[in-house]
Length: 131
Image (cartoon, rainbow, N blue to C red; front, side):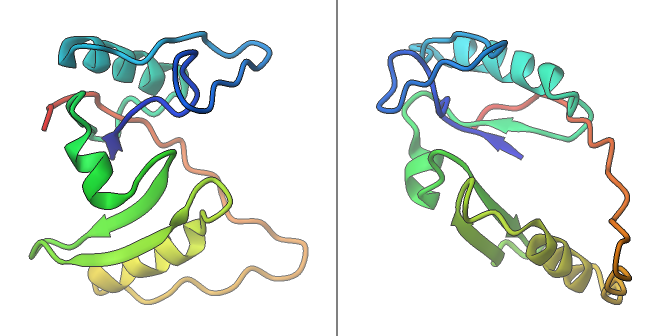
């Protein structure tokens, strides 16, 4: 996971204030973004997922057209194995899961029977390295 520019910071191009959501401003320094990313991962309870943080110059964000959020899968050999649509409406987690299983050489999961749902992940993330 790569943490990029905050999607709804008060000083962003799309500020949104939601009930019970944290009010944040876009960081000016890399260390501020690192701290904000750590708080975000903890609040979302995904702190065990390895995470990288884009610098405030937003080079990674711009290179991948990632704002406000997007799903990508980079294969071990460095090629882009999956590029999802712009989120949140372009999110197709099932497509990402299929691409991940394919990259790992695993068979696709069977389709759930009518009325069944997939088990939820307790996905936790580790905040960490900066680009």
